[in-house]
Length: 193
Image (cartoon, rainbow, N blue to C red; front, side):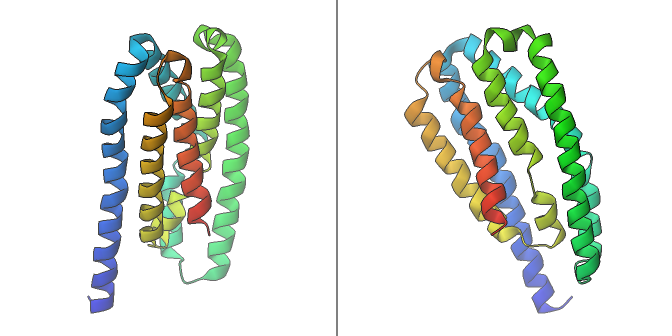
Protein backbone atom coordinates (compact mmCIF):
# COMPACT_ATOMS: atom_id res chain seq x y z
CA UNK A 1 0.00 0.00 0.00
CA UNK A 2 1.47 3.33 -1.03
CA UNK A 3 1.80 6.27 1.32
CA UNK A 4 -0.93 8.19 -0.53
CA UNK A 5 -3.42 5.31 -0.26
CA UNK A 6 -2.56 4.79 3.40
CA UNK A 7 -3.11 8.50 4.14
CA UNK A 8 -6.45 8.44 2.30
CA UNK A 9 -7.51 5.35 4.24
CA UNK A 10 -6.64 6.95 7.58
CA UNK A 11 -8.36 10.20 6.58
CA UNK A 12 -11.55 8.42 5.48
CA UNK A 13 -11.55 6.22 8.58
CA UNK A 14 -11.27 9.28 10.82
CA UNK A 15 -14.04 10.99 8.86
CA UNK A 16 -16.26 7.93 9.18
CA UNK A 17 -15.56 7.94 12.91
CA UNK A 18 -16.68 11.60 13.13
CA UNK A 19 -19.86 10.75 11.20
CA UNK A 20 -20.74 7.89 13.52
CA UNK A 21 -19.77 9.85 16.62
CA UNK A 22 -22.11 12.70 15.69
CA UNK A 23 -24.92 10.19 15.14
CA UNK A 24 -24.50 8.79 18.65
CA UNK A 25 -23.41 11.78 20.72
CA UNK A 26 -26.06 14.26 19.54
CA UNK A 27 -29.00 12.15 20.77
CA UNK A 28 -27.23 11.79 24.12
CA UNK A 29 -27.09 15.58 24.34
CA UNK A 30 -30.67 16.18 23.19
CA UNK A 31 -32.87 13.36 24.47
CA UNK A 32 -32.49 13.92 28.23
CA UNK A 33 -33.24 17.62 27.75
CA UNK A 34 -36.28 16.85 25.59
CA UNK A 35 -37.63 14.33 28.07
CA UNK A 36 -37.37 16.91 30.85
CA UNK A 37 -38.93 19.76 28.85
CA UNK A 38 -41.78 18.04 27.05
CA UNK A 39 -42.78 15.23 29.38
CA UNK A 40 -43.54 11.59 28.73
CA UNK A 41 -46.42 12.16 26.32
CA UNK A 42 -44.50 14.59 24.11
CA UNK A 43 -41.44 12.37 24.15
CA UNK A 44 -43.55 9.37 23.14
CA UNK A 45 -45.14 11.25 20.24
CA UNK A 46 -41.73 12.41 19.03
CA UNK A 47 -40.35 8.87 19.29
CA UNK A 48 -43.31 7.44 17.37
CA UNK A 49 -43.17 10.13 14.67
CA UNK A 50 -39.42 9.75 14.17
CA UNK A 51 -39.69 5.96 14.12
CA UNK A 52 -42.49 6.13 11.56
CA UNK A 53 -40.40 8.40 9.33
CA UNK A 54 -37.46 5.99 9.62
CA UNK A 55 -39.68 3.00 8.87
CA UNK A 56 -41.14 4.56 5.71
CA UNK A 57 -37.67 5.77 4.64
CA UNK A 58 -36.71 2.13 4.14
CA UNK A 59 -38.75 2.31 0.92
CA UNK A 60 -36.64 4.93 -0.92
CA UNK A 61 -33.44 3.59 0.67
CA UNK A 62 -34.05 0.16 -0.92
CA UNK A 63 -30.53 -0.95 -0.05
CA UNK A 64 -28.84 1.79 -2.08
CA UNK A 65 -26.55 2.49 0.88
CA UNK A 66 -24.87 -0.82 0.11
CA UNK A 67 -25.39 -1.49 -3.60
CA UNK A 68 -24.85 2.06 -4.86
CA UNK A 69 -21.76 2.53 -2.71
CA UNK A 70 -20.26 -0.67 -4.09
CA UNK A 71 -21.10 0.14 -7.71
CA UNK A 72 -19.73 3.69 -7.43
CA UNK A 73 -16.53 2.51 -5.73
CA UNK A 74 -16.04 -0.09 -8.45
CA UNK A 75 -16.51 2.43 -11.27
CA UNK A 76 -15.11 5.61 -9.73
CA UNK A 77 -12.67 6.10 -12.62
CA UNK A 78 -15.20 5.43 -15.41
CA UNK A 79 -17.16 8.69 -15.69
CA UNK A 80 -19.84 7.36 -18.05
CA UNK A 81 -20.78 4.42 -15.83
CA UNK A 82 -20.57 6.68 -12.77
CA UNK A 83 -22.97 9.25 -14.26
CA UNK A 84 -25.37 6.54 -15.40
CA UNK A 85 -25.31 4.89 -11.97
CA UNK A 86 -25.92 8.15 -10.12
CA UNK A 87 -28.76 9.25 -12.40
CA UNK A 88 -30.41 5.82 -12.24
CA UNK A 89 -30.27 5.78 -8.45
CA UNK A 90 -31.66 9.30 -8.18
CA UNK A 91 -34.58 8.46 -10.49
CA UNK A 92 -35.30 5.22 -8.63
CA UNK A 93 -35.11 6.96 -5.25
CA UNK A 94 -37.46 9.66 -6.58
CA UNK A 95 -40.06 7.10 -7.64
CA UNK A 96 -39.73 5.20 -4.37
CA UNK A 97 -39.98 8.48 -2.42
CA UNK A 98 -43.28 9.26 -4.17
CA UNK A 99 -44.52 5.82 -3.18
CA UNK A 100 -43.44 6.52 0.40
CA UNK A 101 -45.29 9.85 0.33
CA UNK A 102 -48.44 8.02 -0.79
CA UNK A 103 -48.02 5.71 2.18
CA UNK A 104 -47.53 8.77 4.39
CA UNK A 105 -50.72 10.33 3.05
CA UNK A 106 -52.66 7.15 3.80
CA UNK A 107 -51.15 6.95 7.28
CA UNK A 108 -52.79 10.25 8.26
CA UNK A 109 -56.18 8.58 7.91
CA UNK A 110 -55.11 5.28 9.47
CA UNK A 111 -52.95 6.33 12.44
CA UNK A 112 -55.08 8.03 15.14
CA UNK A 113 -52.03 9.71 16.69
CA UNK A 114 -51.41 11.69 13.51
CA UNK A 115 -55.07 12.80 13.39
CA UNK A 116 -54.82 14.01 17.00
CA UNK A 117 -51.44 15.69 16.50
CA UNK A 118 -51.23 16.88 12.88
CA UNK A 119 -48.13 19.02 13.53
CA UNK A 120 -46.22 15.85 14.32
CA UNK A 121 -47.57 14.26 11.15
CA UNK A 122 -46.34 17.10 8.95
CA UNK A 123 -43.04 17.35 10.80
CA UNK A 124 -42.37 13.63 10.44
CA UNK A 125 -43.30 13.79 6.73
CA UNK A 126 -40.62 16.47 6.30
CA UNK A 127 -38.23 14.22 8.22
CA UNK A 128 -39.08 11.33 5.89
CA UNK A 129 -38.25 13.48 2.86
CA UNK A 130 -34.92 14.44 4.43
CA UNK A 131 -34.08 10.76 4.94
CA UNK A 132 -35.05 10.02 1.32
CA UNK A 133 -32.74 12.77 0.01
CA UNK A 134 -29.68 11.25 1.65
CA UNK A 135 -26.60 11.11 -0.62
CA UNK A 136 -24.17 9.44 1.78
CA UNK A 137 -23.90 6.44 -0.54
CA UNK A 138 -22.17 8.61 -3.14
CA UNK A 139 -19.53 9.97 -0.74
CA UNK A 140 -18.78 6.54 0.66
CA UNK A 141 -18.41 5.24 -2.90
CA UNK A 142 -15.98 7.93 -4.04
CA UNK A 143 -14.22 7.85 -0.66
CA UNK A 144 -14.60 11.56 0.04
CA UNK A 145 -15.95 11.53 3.56
CA UNK A 146 -14.14 14.56 4.98
CA UNK A 147 -16.62 17.15 3.64
CA UNK A 148 -19.57 15.02 4.66
CA UNK A 149 -18.19 14.54 8.19
CA UNK A 150 -17.46 18.23 8.68
CA UNK A 151 -20.84 19.37 7.38
CA UNK A 152 -22.70 16.77 9.44
CA UNK A 153 -20.85 17.69 12.64
CA UNK A 154 -21.62 21.40 12.16
CA UNK A 155 -25.22 20.67 11.22
CA UNK A 156 -25.78 18.46 14.26
CA UNK A 157 -24.25 21.04 16.60
CA UNK A 158 -26.56 23.71 15.18
CA UNK A 159 -29.48 21.34 15.73
CA UNK A 160 -28.50 20.87 19.38
CA UNK A 161 -28.31 24.63 19.81
CA UNK A 162 -31.73 25.17 18.23
CA UNK A 163 -33.31 22.47 20.40
CA UNK A 164 -31.94 24.03 23.58
CA UNK A 165 -33.00 27.53 22.54
CA UNK A 166 -36.51 26.89 21.24
CA UNK A 167 -38.04 23.73 22.67
CA UNK A 168 -39.39 24.62 26.08
CA UNK A 169 -42.64 22.65 26.38
CA UNK A 170 -44.89 20.09 24.75
CA UNK A 171 -46.32 22.62 22.29
CA UNK A 172 -42.94 23.34 20.76
CA UNK A 173 -41.73 19.72 20.74
CA UNK A 174 -42.57 19.03 17.08
CA UNK A 175 -39.77 21.45 16.19
CA UNK A 176 -37.30 18.71 17.12
CA UNK A 177 -38.43 16.71 14.07
CA UNK A 178 -38.14 19.80 11.87
CA UNK A 179 -34.64 20.59 13.16
CA UNK A 180 -33.58 17.00 12.54
CA UNK A 181 -35.00 17.19 9.02
CA UNK A 182 -33.27 20.53 8.34
CA UNK A 183 -30.02 19.08 9.66
CA UNK A 184 -30.31 16.12 7.27
CA UNK A 185 -31.29 18.33 4.32
CA UNK A 186 -28.46 20.73 5.08
CA UNK A 187 -25.95 17.91 5.02
CA UNK A 188 -27.35 16.61 1.73
CA UNK A 189 -27.41 20.00 0.03
CA UNK A 190 -24.06 21.34 1.23
CA UNK A 191 -22.19 18.10 0.69
CA UNK A 192 -23.13 18.20 -3.01
CA UNK A 193 -21.41 21.56 -3.49
